[in-house]
Length: 252
Ligand code: NAD
Image 1: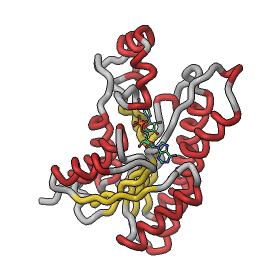
Image 2: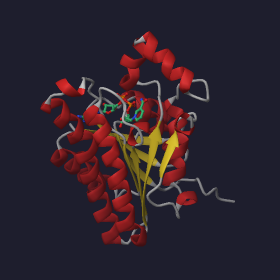
Image 3: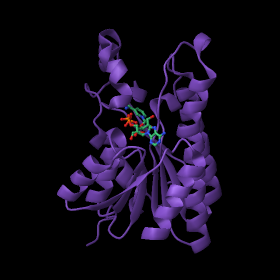
Image 4: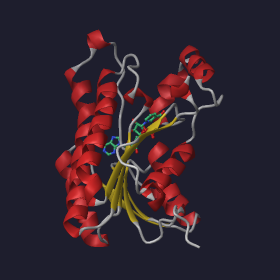
C-alpha cells in the first residue's frame, strides 16, 4: 500500500538548503523519496552527504538568491536540466536586528529582497510552469511565529514574514483551482544560525525557553516532517494554510 506521504518520483527545489531549517527540510523530503535540488549561495556538500547517507538523491545549485533574477534563472536552469519541479520550498531567509528608531534602509531592503521578493518570484516561476503543463505542484513557504506576532528589533523580518502569509494566501486563492497547493510553515524558535544571537543572550534565551510549552527549542528535523506533509498528497485539499511548528508557542 502506498503511503500518502510518499514523495517517490517527485522533484523538489529547496532554497537555503545548506544548513539549519532548509537542510532539515531537504533531508526529510529526500528520505520521503523526493530528488532534492539544494539551492543557495553556499556549498551544499554537507546536505548532499546527509541525503546520500540516507539513501536519497540531491544536487547543488548556487546563486545569490537575494537577486531575484538570479534566483529565477537558477530555478529555470535546474528545471531545464533535470526536469520540472513538483515541490518548491521557499526557505532561504535572513534577519537583521536594530531598534525601529535606528533601522536602516539597507537592513530593510536586504531582508525584504530575499525573504519576500525572491520567494514570490520563485513561486511565480514554479506556478507558471506547473499551470502551463497542467501538473500538480506544491509550494511550501517558510514563515515564522513573527507572521502572527510583532517581535522586537526585527522590523524588516516581521514585515517579510507577515508578507509571506499574504502571498501564501493570495497564491493559494489563485492556484487552488489549478491543482497547485500553496501553504506555509511557521517555525517557532529553532536552533540554527538565525537564532545564534538570541541563544547567546542568556536572559532572552531563558525567557524564550520558559514560554515554549514543549520545554525545548525546535530542531530543524521538527520542521522537515511538516514540509513532507504539506508537499505530499496527504495535504492535497490544504490551500493557504500557515502551519505553526513551534512547540506550542502560539497556543500560549
Ligand atoms: P540559517 O541562517 O541557518 O539559514 C538561512 C539560509 O538562507 C542558509 O541556508 C543561507 O545560506 C541562506 N541564505 C541567506 N542569504 C542567502 C542569499 N542571499 N542567497 C541564498 N541563500 C541565502 O537560518 P534558519 O533558521 O535555518 O532559517 C531558515 C528559514 O527559517 C528562514 O526563512 C527563517 O526566517 C525561518 N525561520 C527560522 C526560525 C528559527 O528559529 N531558526 C524561526 C522562524 C522562521
